[in-house]
Length: 109
Ligand code: HEC
Image 1 (cartoon, protein in one colour):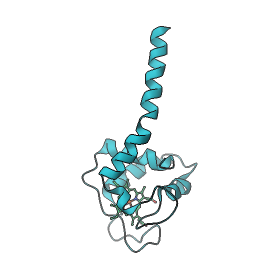
Image 2 (cartoon, protein in one colour):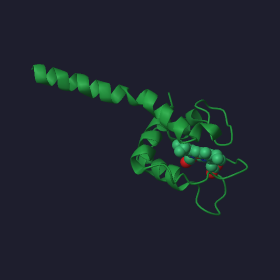
Image 3 (cartoon, protein in one colour):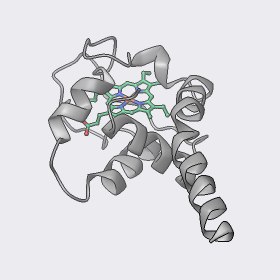
């Protein structure tokens, strides 16, 4: 029982810790230079607007993680109607991209 309890506490710690880590990650990777955490558009869409766009859709996290690393597909029209597509982020690992995608989809809090 004691083991179970500490496992549960560990799980909670693991789940709640990335809330801060993800913002730090987004800052470190330069995401917040172009994106706000709110709904307003900077150069790219605000993360709350992205979360709203994909709300309730399945399998989005993996697609978004791939997008975060690769940027907008070459020659594509911008999805958000902004002046520029998103550049690729080669400095973002697959694991980091998943963390960031999950954070964005969760409303970037
Ligand atoms: C140089 C500016 C810039 C940087 C840096 C940048 N983005 Fe973007 N991002 C954009 C723009 C512009 C768009 C909108 C593209 C479009 O309309 O097609 C966008 C779109 C997005 C979207 C929405 C994709 C969709 O399917 O609607 C996500 C999520 C995103 N960016 C995450 C990130 C993350 C995470 C980082 C950091 C690793 C990052 N961005 C760094 C400019 C940037």
